[in-house]
Amino acid sequence: MKKLLSLLEYGPIAALALPLLALAQGSTDVPIQAAPTNITSVPALLGKVCTAINFLFTGLIILSIFFVLLAAYKYLTARGEAEKITEANHEILYAAIAVGIGIVAKGVPIAIGLFLGSTFTACGAGGTGV
Image (cartoon, rainbow, N blue to C red; front, side, top):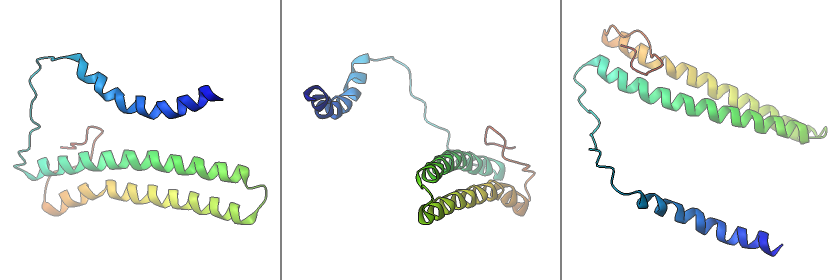
């Protein structure tokens, strides 16, 4: 028991010290390049919007999977209690609504492109779509 307690006490301290070990790697002499920020056209702007939406959509899908698994766990541990089953039903419903909103949001760059008269077709896997 004392060994487990010492791990619980010193584990967070060790986790906080781990980034300091990364400083010991030394210099790699690789020049750092700044990200290009020149947006000079509508397709370039829509490409940036697409990239942001793709990142958010991926996070949304991962989060919704987590909530569906959490609701499934609540179903398994409900033991027939109506209140817990209703709560699990609501969580699954909220996850489905979130995915639906995310899918609609994926269409926003296309709508903006059509509104602005761009030849923008869709957000591809790379996020540019031009």
